Length: 335
Image (cartoon, rainbow, N blue to C red; front, side, top):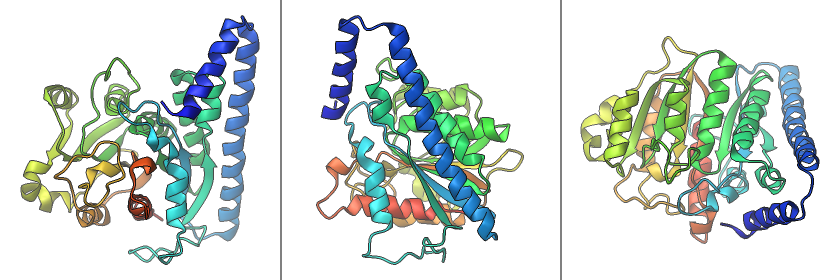
């Protein structure tokens, strides 16, 4: 556990030991929660009003950071990822034009509504049930401001559950999900934690928030992962058969008959040669160009996306994986 997280836990333990009235703590939590949601709401309103005034934008990706790392089963470094990804997006070592010709400096292409203040909420004793609700509500606030579409920067993969839930509930029906990852993250409750980053897609499928779930890049899967996949009707594409599946995966068409398509990119879907800055290093993964080919050729109405599991604490000195995560985010921009 990080020093900051421990400090928050110790603070709450001291308050409980001092017999601070529960009503006082609950009232304080409500105020912090309200303030957190108000901050996201007002930022989203401001950006939405600006874009509507400018006109000409059908959809604008809006960065929303969710710096959560405590549901990781190994390392908590992904909590520090959102600011590093933002820094890389605007790094002067490259220009602001994506491979598909989109200009990131144009707010009609990319906006930013800041971060959900995860650590401040946890410092106040907000538990994971409430925290997941706050993340969902934050995503909905972004979606309420046309033409903003959430592009969420994690954080560990546990954030995908509340984000997908929010997208599905806001749109009024399930979505199709393209999930790029070394792991299926579909344990019922990994190490007893229902919100574990290794259990996010079990929660999504149980909730009926996805019609189809395609998992690509899988190369660390056990018996439970396969059984859970069969239980939920997941389409799992393992790296051992990628050469056989490549043509189909690089020509996907998703979303017909549902409310849209959600894309979740775990940075460890990539071979560690391309992205060493991850918590779980799994050799034998996708190349960066493999991922770009899949995303560039995808035929879909992408309504939201996330980039998760970049761990700055394991990155190279020159921030190589931060740049990889940034380009993944750029590639997910639709407008």
